[in-house]
Image (cartoon, rainbow, N blue to C red; front, top):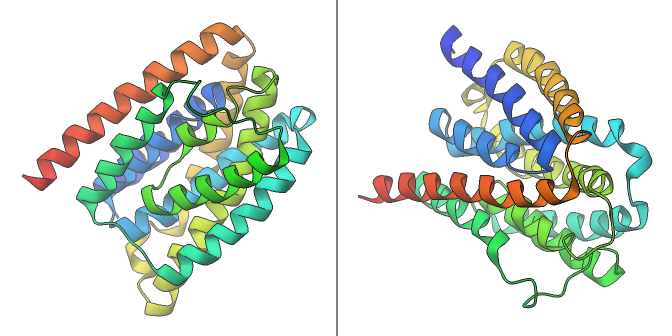
Length: 249
């Protein structure tokens, strides 16, 4: 891997971790698309999983006093079940399909709130969230807007939302690493992944980005937090839909 590409991946890790640190999503969406531009699909999934595992894990640590632990427990149980099912199915999207899914996922933020009365504080809904979000993460690479649907009706503060969502995504990204990384390891195709030193530099960059995002989050209001999240992920989704169309054509 050349130095320009490595620098691009490291800078993207910092920028996207900052986005996620502010909005609780969007960063992972941008990172997945950026990786899919320059890496094979399976390698992009594993790399995305590794970087987002660190970014979300560190964000959860920074805001650990705000985590809603009952939600996290139920989510983790269902997440494990989804990971096992997808592993047996062995589904891996092509690049056009991946960008199509990346473009469609953000549109979930515009579903009328009256259509789906979901609340992650309810145990059954937290279980459904863990299963669906992890399943979508393993097929589209990201699932932030779907996860957000389960939090918009809760009475959690913005800090609790960001902290709890970060903790749940640790399980989703761990599943991604296992489901897509194991076949690469068995097939001896790990050379498709970035070299170890890129991860060694990108991981602390993600941690710094997460801290920077938290600094911005502290200075936002709950109203601006929700408004900006929807518009940012929508614009990203439109870009990916255009990319998918170009690939199909």
